[in-house]
Image (tube, rainbow, N blue to C red; front, side, top):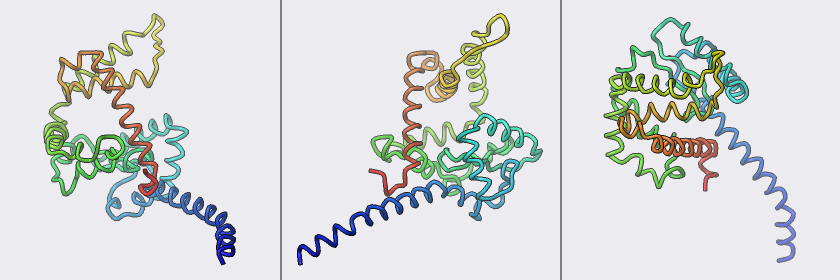
Amino acid sequence: MAVDLATTVQAFLPRIFVYTIIGTTAAWLLHLMQPAFQAALSKDYQKFNWAGDKKGVATFMKASYEVALKSREYFKETHRKILEAGHGGIQLVPIPHCSTGFMLMVPKQLLNEYVKQPENDISLKRYTLQALVPDYTTLGPHIVIHPVYRNVVHKELYQKVADKMPMVNEEMKAALDDNVASKVDSNGVVQINMWDTASAILSRSANRIISGQPLCDNKEYRDATAEYAATFFASALYARFIPPFLRP
C-alpha cells in the first residue's frame, strides 16, 4: 500500500510542478494586466479622456510596449496630445510601470481644487501603501502612515504645492544652470549623463521644499538623498511587479 502511494505521488509530481508553473504564470500576467482592465473597464474612469487615444485594453497594452521600448517618442507624443487637447478636462495617461498603471494629468487651473479634496476621495494613505510597498521598502507600513508623516506630507506639501511652486522654479533654474548650461561648449553642444543630471535636478527641487535651502545647498546631502530615493523607488517598483501572494 505504501509503495503504491509513493508511486502515485511520484507519478503526479511532474504534473503538479507543471500546473504550478502554469498557474503562477497566469496569476502573474493577470496581476500585470490588472491596471489595464481597471483603466479601461472600471466605471470610476469612464468620464476621463485618454491622452489622444481611444479607451481600451488594446490601447493600454500598446502603451505598455511603447513605454518599455520607445519611451522617448511615447512621452513626447503624449505631451503634445495633452497640450493640443485644448480643454480643462483631466487626462488619463497609461504609464504601465507607475504605481497604479496609469496617471491622471490634472490641468493647472484645477490643481488647487484637486489637492484640497477630502481623504475619502483622494487618499494619501491608500496611495502610499499601494505605491511604496512599505513592508519591503521601509521598516513597515507604520513608517509611512504615521500621523506626523501625514501632517507634514499631506498638509504642508501636498495641499500647498501650488504656493511652493515659485521656490521650486527658482531651484530648478539654478540646477539647470549648474548641470546643463555651465557645460555647453563653444559650439553650443552639451554632453550629459541623463540619469545623473535628472537625479541632481530632481534632488535639488525636492529638497528645496522638504529640507529647506541650507541643506539643499549642501552637495553631500543632495547626493545622499538622491541615491536613497533612487534605491527606494526602484525597490518599490520591482515589488509592485510581483503579485502579493508571491512576495516573501
